[in-house]
Length: 573
Image (cartoon, rainbow, N blue to C red; front, top):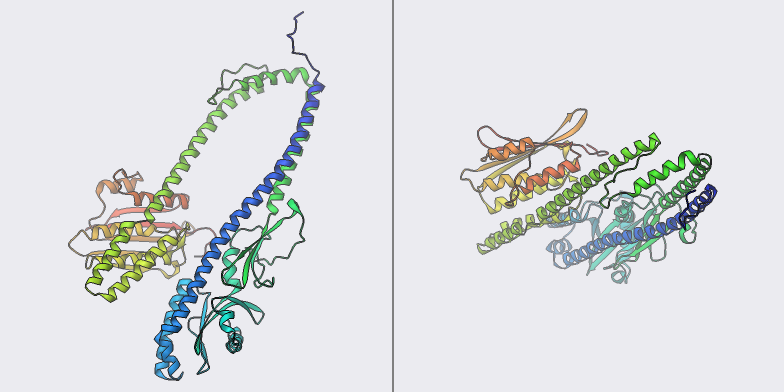
């Protein structure tokens, strides 16, 4: 008989079956503990993220409130239009002209901060109340608001109650946020609906029954508790600890009498935990079944499986399988070969994903670099300085306003898509800035289909090709004509937007044009062609290779770029 080595005491199969059952039960309990801990951590992380998001929004609203307060106070004290209106009768031509000037000023302010804001003025001497910008309230609410404003004006504490403190008021069953700025016998009023103010926070994913609302200092909800889908949410009974599916985050505004509450619905986390527990329970049942099968097929199955397990243990450190021992079971032999192929496929897949992520990061970095152009900003400042030296005051105003709008759009656009009308307006501002700097170097013409103004496209895509035309325009003696045309048409049973940018300049270099037509990458080692390549990559990733870009030279001189962009899903055309 063969002597067994010391320490290798054999055990019956039932012994190993008991061990497997105990291990499965321990894994089930451990999974429960890990699931509960994971849910707790995920809730904390989600809550922290939403707190940071809410703080960014609240900070922006605080800044808007502060600026609007300052603007209304400055207008009351310094604007000549109000002095004229206060000195003349409402039906006089001087009053009407001054009212028109005031209306234009506050309409511009409303464009910068949103159509949700409403502005009114009240002249106590004439007992005259009127809006000084387009209003979004109903006429019934307007009359009720006017009546309440009259009562507030008679309050001796109106300055302390409303000035620099945006306060909620109830108008015909609907809450508005109001601020009254007094100056002697005239007043300016700012107003915004509570639902409009909280609307951006409702776009955050707070769960199926999560919602965001405004609450006054008495704890009264002043905006409807609507979820992101517009569904009215009912309050839930509070449960302790991890069983509570809702968490409330409260954030205070500055110089206001209300705060913002975000109620987060964590129902998805509990569903994940239940699904995970069911999986582990299924695993426990399957393990028990396997143990029963092992008792029956002890000699015919366990031995070959042991050999297969030993083969798997011979994996090299770099993940390559070593020489597998042969098995007497055909299925296990096939599994050996398939496992080798699987290891190779996994390695190839991991490398491909890694390279793709690196490419995405590089494109994003190039996009961010393209947004920040300090030399363009410095050139604009230099042009304004030169205009100031020769007292071109009107040109200075236009140049400063265009530069401000240009960089506001550039720095505030962190989205993947923007409205085509906004992008074209940004291009128009850029061209006007360049025309102010290089007079008579070029002219431009923009033709836009009215049905395409609300189409969504990636930001700063058009500017890349416009900049290319301008760069060659300022280096040529004859005046260059730049044309931007936007049309809508149907292609392969879907609506597409066709954008053509063309000029009568020198056109593309033949070598560069050949590579662009063939879809080959351009040489970027000298810092050139970065914008075009970055734009093509962005279109490829954002439209999943459905967007088309056609490059060509125009007969007789000039370059042409045609972008064919499909509509995004769930986007109105």
